[in-house]
Image 1: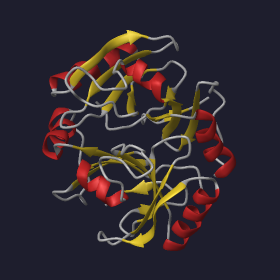
Image 2: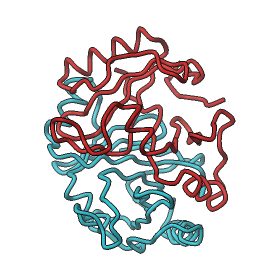
Image 3: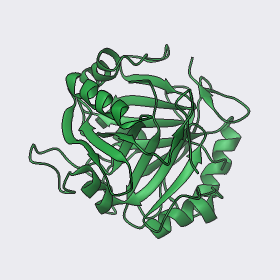
Image 4: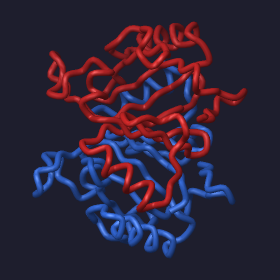
Length: 146
Length: 146
């Protein structure tokens, strides 16, 4: 897996308040691709997203109360995006071979992409490995939001 | 506050295992500035750090069991770095004026920098606002780890 982070998603309780903080409070500009359910902010080579905490837990397939192994749900995901579904399959296999617990195998998802989740060894943190046809990655792997 | 993320720090239970996953498992290269207590990985314009979960809670001044307001401790911090202590003071004031709960006022810290923490409105997430004399920021605000 190339050394990069594409997206950092914070699961928040009150999306309206969190958006207002970044946009009205700090003056950050939201990307054009967001919706009522999610907001994206381009931060140079990485994107920050604000998403509902419950929705994030559902997306990762980890109950907000924690999973069956007793691991907590941490409402943050770090996403590594590939350039194709094949890159996601390869990166997911590489992460699992390296000891990451598979949480969601690569799957076509409602937003039009292809997404998977693993848990980072030695931690309760979620790593998403995904392909999003709407997020262009340049040769260096930098994401540019529409 | 300029629109950027400088550092994403994951608080982990087992730093040795988490490092081995990224370095031996995925082949990521650690930056030269790390120590036994923290590992840094340059990811284009942002840095990823692995730090002990307990140490991260102590750094933010939030007990791992949560704070007095009943907010949980989420073992991840997003850091916005400025180019000087004065920029940290200004950004901290801006964030608090925008409704962020102040958790730690800008303070000289043991690692030689100047750091503060707020809680992002509408969430339990921690935002660090800091100056690190060892982390050069270029004109665009991109960090380059030594």
